[in-house]
Length: 219
Length: 219
DNA sequence: TTTAAAGAGTGGTCTGACCACTCTTTACTA
DNA sequence: TAGTAAAGAGTGGTCAGACCACTCTTTAAA
Image 1: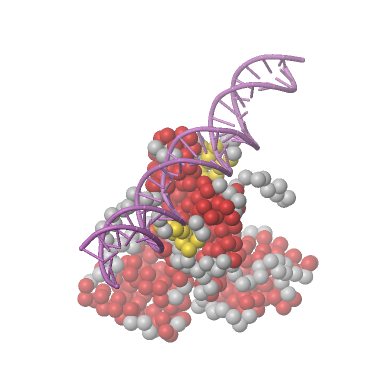
Image 2: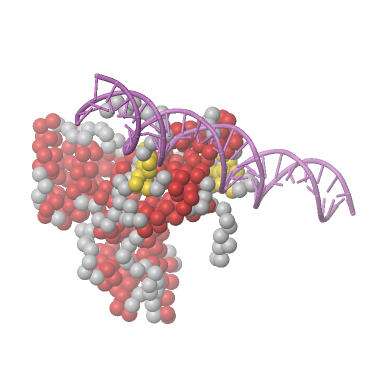
């Protein structure tokens, strides 16, 4: 186990040092990070090495650079890292099923959370969605799920869900069919009265409908 | 909305081109990527620019470089990106609660999955854990949860859990107390017979014990 | 046949040089 | 004096070239 720690990977050390530096200097979101040339001196490394570390963090969406101005600590909520990451990850076919299952995991948890919270259930959005189905005869699939995940009030889960959604086989950008509408109405009405079991039942019926026979239930 | 798309961000273009190149040439996991000097010529860019792109992908864990040998397409399962990413994300204090809740979400889902799968329940690890508690009087908290998440057979979920675990307030690296042992035994014995409801009940009792009154239930 | 040395190829790092851009300061003009 | 234009300083973006350290193959010597 004794890792001899070969001298390589200096740019990774720089990343670490940058983390410390940001913490020590208390740089806030949107705050300015020392210039590349200054970092080069302070961290005892060539500018190109500093840049390799900074570019890495930029790709992760953790910092933002503006030519002529400087480098700034980014709001991590802007993470475009997911696109890059996912594009590579999804090359592995075996992970598709994991993505599917994990996505459903977050969705069911969101539903449970909403059912258990009077405040979440009291949100006007549920009635709006029901209304929309009645008047327009269909609704965007994503709208329903997304609102539930949003209502579960967990930004992290929401973030993960957004990521997974993009690489899911489910066509979230399509409208519900007539058949789906029945299930969705069952879902929403039971959610309104906080009946977790029945709401989840409706949810499972729905995804069964949408995803077909492929995939596996998470439980 | 019309993004004039300023010419900047060439290293991002390189990342894109690399993705295409990998796809076109059908480079498999573990396969070799052209050398930096060759990429520099083919993509019409300086070697340092190429390196900035490559280093970014390396931080993401998408490629692996070996000095003297070359650059290789990595198995994404190794991506240590999570550590880097998390360290920055976790600077946002409001996300601590989200992390806690999301972690529990993955744990409960894992428990449900294991309870529902005869194969998972038949794993010898559960009996081993029980045995260990009896003989040694305590057990590492992490071992129990981790084995359950592993047994749920979802690599992605496992990955996310590992990440969240690191930034959780729960001291997973501690041994169970005498009081905890009772709850853990209840958990494991019920898991063995596949009683999902009681297993989850034991799980909630346990985390209540470990996390105290802080935090909120996810459902 | 075995072994040692040389060479080619590759990533790791640094230096120095330009360019393009932003912001501030300065100097000039009306 | 007020307004404006030019100059300067600072910053990221990119490139070229130079070494170094390391791995692997080839060649030459024992």
